[in-house]
Length: 247
Image: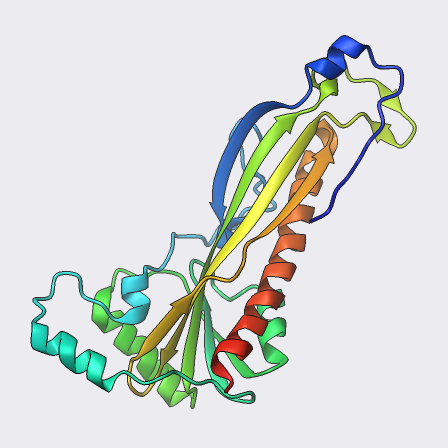
């Protein structure tokens, strides 16, 4: 977690007492992580024009929520369940829910340990078990032993600083920062065995960051936090995959 501190010498005491008023919070997908301003406007330059929503866990795992399930099927699934393994050097097909291709930092993080091929995570009208079977067939034809899919959320909360009530006054290096943004990233990963369809899921430890910004640096500060947290979370997720499945 990065801590950014600023000094406000000479500001009236009353203004400092009014500091840290909560002004808003938001949630967005890692696959559509462009800047959101207070007005709700998303920068077209940073937004993802290809974002069409998320893949569901049902699609990736091949679960049909409308199917009639018997107790015998549940028993057979438990009896046939084996521990998933993913030794270093294995071939995997990587999918980021909602993205045409996975984020590069995640690809690079996993490429330290595995042979990685990327696949689209943009949702299609096809759903349930058919979609999962199609993914497994695509992976099998490519010679990939496992499918690794992941989802992610960025959660933000803004707090007004003492200078929020002060008129904008230039100073050396720019303008006085008036807002602090807390951002957290949470990931969920699924590992699917291409041959059997068995799967496992886990959530790595979330990462958090704090940064202060002024009106004209809000967007760059926000996107800097997004990049920083994605890199940290992806590196940790890749290491978690190795720890969980390599032995």
